[in-house]
Length: 506
Image (cartoon, rainbow, N blue to C red):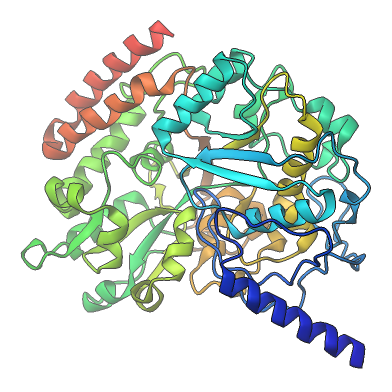
């Protein structure tokens, strides 16, 4: 007993020391070969698509220096287990030189930082993280691939995944997964959400989590109007009516804010609910001239007319800042925003969320999901070293058990690793319920209240071989529509023409 108390005190002292020195920040510090890893007490920041909250004390934290007690749920695909990371200890690296992970400029999650610590502890390989602006990141990738330079482990967004895969710039990960994995089994990788990174049954990118959006609302503003809060029974038509009722431009209060540029946190979800498409399934034609898409954009035009701030206001203030300052009653926010909301006093007191609404006539709840894969360049000489770090990233949550990060796992069985009680918002209903409805059955089932079955329609973020050839025009034409919503259909048809021209050139 005395030994255990002494060990606990030492662990706490180590953790406090690491917090004071900023351990989990970029750049990630080196760990001497004789150091023991502390308990998981590092501070965290939000990562696009994988946000997280500040770590709370957790008596179930995994001891990385000893064999952990297995907490088995089910074996096979997506099994959630709580174990040690000793499967890394006997690995003989190709090289002990540092490896580099490169991605665009978003702050890494706490899980990522912890994986860097664990990997160096067991392999002796330090992990550097290099962050770039979005444009500089793409330039770095193009330059590396064109000149045969190894960029290290890279994060590949769906917008440019097709190009790099088809050009042969990325390594197929299947042999590494089947022949070199130390922990991860091929059947444990849920390939369906990773379809953007699958070509001819070969896997070119891997990530354990994905992102989507939810409908957020200001309880205070709803209470002032004596209106019921949004819930799983709401349709987009209900949102439009509520936005109109809550709109008070004379007092600079508005029903809802949707940006013409922030598509993933906006009208892409509405288009999906109305069974429309931004781009065809084979990525060869625009969907903005489809009847279903036009119907969704007319609903969006109704929101603009009846409940949104002027375009100038939305250009000067993003929807997150408008919402968290009490200027708007509703907002569509991505799962990566949860961390910032957890740190915002106004949000904690006044805001909450629910699952995205559905289209009334279609009885469809639509949502856009995004997954960016970790990938390796073709011809990489240290592929095994890179792979085992990627393997660790993929398996970290299921090995360590419940963590403080909020991310949506791609494996349904891993949903149970999320400690929902740590969040003051309706995260389970809003985000998990959209992407994993079977895991939240009963929480988000609107049929019991509405008397009708509502289906979820989830689509991957729209992309093509050269997404960024046509994507800027979406914002250009939607800005025109935001300024003149009565001409929404006209601008959608014009956008479809430009998109088709660009897509034909691919």
